[in-house]
Figure 1 (cartoon, rainbow, N blue to C red):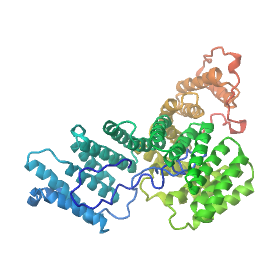
Figure 2 (cartoon, rainbow, N blue to C red):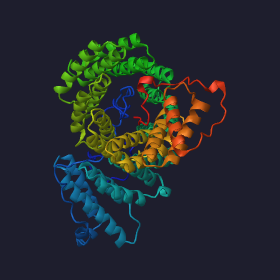
Figure 3 (tube, rainbow, N blue to C red):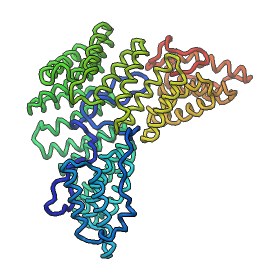
Figure 4 (tube, rainbow, N blue to C red):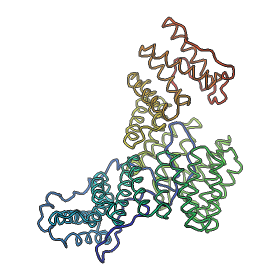
Amino acid sequence: MPGLVSVKTPPDAPPLSISVPEIRPESSTRSEQQPRTPTPRKPPSPSPSRPKPSPARSAKKPPPDSPNPNTLLSDPSLDNPDLGPFLLKLARDTIASGEGPVKALDYAIRASNSFERVAIEKSEEPSLDLVMSLHVLGAIYCSLGRFEEAVPVLERAINVADVSKGMDHALAGFSGYMQLGDTYSMLGQVDKSIECYEKGLQIQIESLGEIDPRVGETCRYLAEAHVQAMNFDKAEELCKKTLEIHRAHSEPASIEEAADRRLMAIICEAKGDYESALEHLVLASMAMIANGQDSEVAAIDVSIGNIYMSLCRFDEAVFSYQKALTVFKSSKGDHHPSVASVFVRLADLYHRTGKLRESKSYCENALRIYAKPVPGTTAEEIAGGLTEISAIFESVDEPEEALKLLQKAMKLLEDKPGQQSTIAGIEARMGVMLYIVGRYEEARNSFESAVTKLRSSGERKSAFFGVVLNQMGLACVQLFKIDEACELFEEARRILEKECGPCHQDTIGVYSNLAATYDAMGRVEDAIEILEHVLKLREEKLGIANPDFEDEKSRLAELLKEAGRARNKKAKSLENLIDPNSRRTKKESTKKWGFRI
């Protein structure tokens, strides 16, 4: 949590060593694996980051019992004003000594209750000591994986801190909002998490000013959260502000500026601005070279290689990857996951350039490293690599192998907190694989699980969510669950119209699927209305060179014939008859009355 400033601490108390589990595990940029859409897509450039949060899905052991608060409140000894600071110090000492959080939890609860009781007895407002004890209590709950119980505790701490009462209260409020945001993040509630971070940032700006270095760190933290939520415009705005603050307070080509530029490169890449992304990465690399950070330079080289590959500058991409590979092997060893990640990128590159033998060889090399990971390798690193390799197997028409790798990735992440959206992305990909091999019931169940997680994590309005709904609808059609499919297509339509616009290929695909579903349900007029809308879009905005145009036109003609009327068609200009952006080929065009993935 950036810029965390503790409030009043009991005298002679040792530093508290427990904290909310870190949202950013390694460094200060994004993770190597973003959740994929159901169709294969190159992930953003690798760099360390905040992992996607999620709840602990299946706790193997029941959580330790908490002391009963009602029993504690009735304890007359809690009226002693010296007891609260003593119990809080005991809680901190217990954690510092390594005795474990369960005993510390008892002390922290009793300390909080004591501070509350004393304030009531004296008819005073609760003190900052209560805020501190609640922060400690919330951190202990989080360390135990009991995030839901931490939320009301941290909300109480925020309510106690009154930012109008001076700097101490303001910083206590800031700390509370940031800690609560981290907790919501671990629960997968991204929208609430961002809302808390924004409130914390506002308090910090009001207290410290807009150009304080600590404000810059919080802006960067919030920018990463917006990248995670795919709010790239807002993330770019915050990242630019962070760059300005660090340039004002740091030396030129500082490590802080390099980290900011790496984040900015990820944002530019996500928005398709590859040239700007490349510029930021080159500047970040120069800064890291000046500071002697060879491993970070190698990580940036991997990101530069990804940009070159997006620009189809394959020779330059290979050179960047090979540079990074040499450094990783010499500094980390031949079997480090960083080496495997470069193998995966090279495998993807050679697959794209048609060198399938080389691609397969690099995939096998990466899989050997993931099969016997070196100590310190995280499950997230292995799962991310397996997911990327599965996309390559999927592209070469080996869905069964791709499915096996996705299942392994799922198994690695299933008990990890903070991975809800990542797991949802994997489940969506698994659904596609199961659909391809004809296992429609399993595909529907996989999509349903992904949809449930995305709804709970605040991504119910994203384009990715709309695409997954469309995929689930297709699986329902294959199972003859037409009513359910119709509901899914209609929801996907609403989301994609808002997020992508009516002319986007994903939106048009949903239109086509919805028209076919309406026809199957006997709602011929609704099907006609949608197909007329699609043809109008193609004729007036997209062009009619797309091979799907004739298919849709034939479908509409048959429906009109069945309904006994002619098409309501307007004249169109010659300049709109050609679709310059058509991406579909005749081979990809669906058959009459078909559905589109």
